[in-house]
Image (tube, rainbow, N blue to C red; front, top):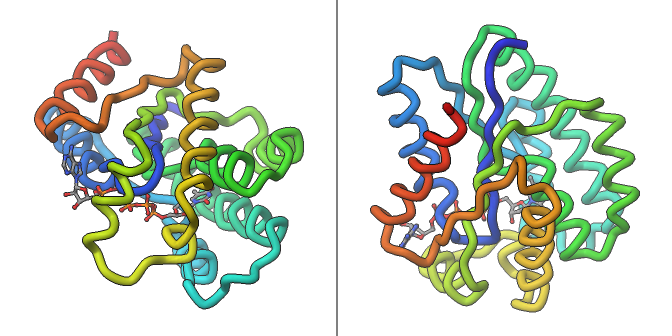
Length: 206
Ligand code: T5A
């Protein structure tokens, strides 16, 4: 594959969606072809699975069902969107990917990391993001930003200790995989967050 695969991660409301547009513009200024996508979702069937996963009425979903639906959506997303775009030589930027599964289903729900790794290897083989930008902020900051939006989805309704475990798992993954992760301080004003992202992308280009 000749393209490049970058992911953006973090707990609720840290600014992933806001900053992904900045990343797209930054890469397009360099005359690069960019595909922006998201998880869960990104393809027609995977978006239908997303609707099931985020539906606030599904509050008794079994943890294993949630995990398997995440990977079912991911298999479809990889097959229909990510791999074809990479084969065309594009830069694929995904708003969340498998690190979110480690953080939410592993850290948040308590599913073993080994089980998640088995599914990761099954669905992805050795395919991994080349760069992961982790937007990090205290849980209270993200939840305050999200709280302004009205009705909450199934994950956003979790308690703050769930999101503390999510955040800690992301930070732990960044610690053990320093070659892939760049941790961005998402508590700063937007211009400063974007300046940190630009530095990380410039390092990646080198
Ligand atoms: N999930 C996903 C799993 O459990 N397992 C998985 O494997 C995967 C892939 C998906 C949900 O699914 C879960 C995790 C999620 O709960 P989602 O919509 O992708 O849902 O994720 P959310 O985190 O819910 O997305 P959000 O839209 O809530 O958060 P973002 O994208 O991080 O935040 P954003 O950009 O919308 O910004 C939120 C607000 O903050 C402001 C923005 O203007 C906006 O109003 N803001 C700032 N304000 C001040 N200073 C800054 N620096 C700011 N940056 C943004």
